[in-house]
Length: 327
Image 1 (cartoon, rainbow, N blue to C red):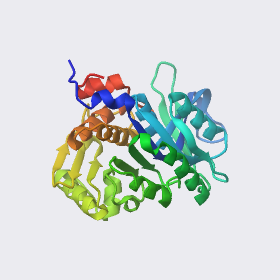
Image 2 (image 1 turned 45 degrees about the vertical axis):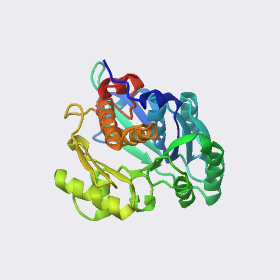
Image 3 (image 1 turned 135 degrees about the vertical axis):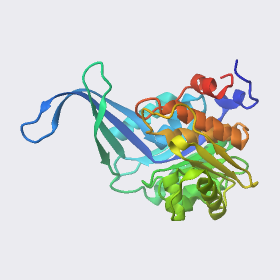
Image 4 (image 1 turned 60 degrees about the vertical axis):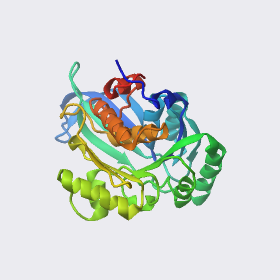
């Protein structure tokens, strides 16, 4: 039987803000029929198309799946994919009033074509990325801030999900830093330096190595890297994720904890696993979990979603099962 952690009962009553770059993850599924006479490529007969919330929208979707409440702020195009993303998040329960259309940018999309015969696992054939073609203007950030200010009193935590597409401007980072007494956690692909002075950052090894200008391998180097980033950014914590090698948590108190990977060593799909880590880590901290416990819980959550195809979330029941608490 699971353990009743004191903070677990707060999950469904917790409101978090997710600020960042929403991405439309599009999956085209089909059946290979023959090699084209026009070029040496497979011809795929279309079967279905699915659009899932990706990027910051996947972070929000993970939180919603676990029973938390979400206020989402970000920018997308005024186009069909942007409206579908907004509608998916709204139907899942998110407040999307601050998910703004910001022309001339278009909604960032990552299209994957998967093919395979009936009753066989579809194989990834090709991936097509759609860049935004622009960035939101300062006025959009100010509009996001005004909406977020109206929700300020309800917030128990903030996730900054930065994929480098421009949704998180300096004014939004400053706004997050101004919030007293709640965890603010950033997951940033290309500019960790922009998120100094917050509660925590959650880089992977590649992102950490890029910031520090060196490669990272092994627990000792990973622990040193996490502590170096802690000092460089002035955060309270650094959660360095290492794929199937686990995680390292460095804290301002001086404690450094190496956490082995959870689950089997083989995975189905790592897409979105970093979003799950950041979402669960922030949610657990927001509910009062100890940092090491929050890190372990995020590690176990990631061990669930990598066994699922595509950009995936886990349910509260799944999380409780692997983490050992009563959902």
